[in-house]
Image (cartoon, rainbow, N blue to C red; front, side, top):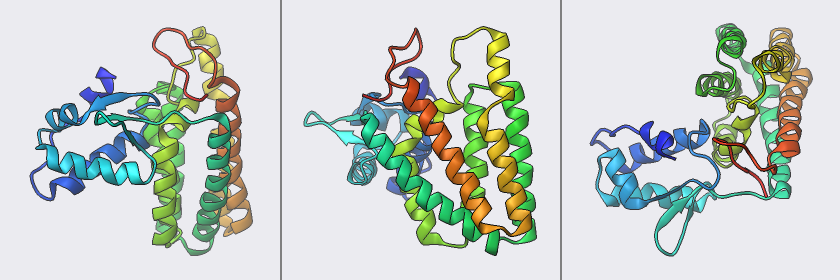
Length: 246
């Protein structure tokens, strides 16, 4: 938990509640905050160098969406999902993110498609050099959200962001946590990671303006990652790792 808090930085004084909200959202989206992480409102305020009021407001917004839980003693916690809840969330993500990819294939500009391709190539380079890192998680998120922005639908973006706020602390275990296996196996996992192929198919679909193929590539990327996570997430973890589903 201390490592997660160390990533927090003081926010600027303008529109403090919104800025605190943005900071907490990024920590959830990136997986820096993990299931069962707990901290107090006062601790958050101190880490972000703001008063309690904007922290309360930002946390209340995230609690209303289900991304955070506030206990009667005002402790803030990242909720721990059941495997069934995560499966349900995954199904909703596949529908919405698949639709965003379909729209992106139809609506994206050439520059947006080139941008997605560049991010896909960057993701593969990061997997080669920093598999199991926060950098890999960020590269994956940047790619996905570039596709969703290219859909041209703000309503879908809002829904997808809300879903990622709930899923982020969990889904990033697919590429953001070292498995604790020998280096040779870690390298093999990186080189054969399912997202490489799904992202390549996605980029081909965008270039071909094939909405159905783009939607399928995104949905399959989400589905396979979910199955891998659910297969291992309830296991007792070694030092530095934890159970992330119940």
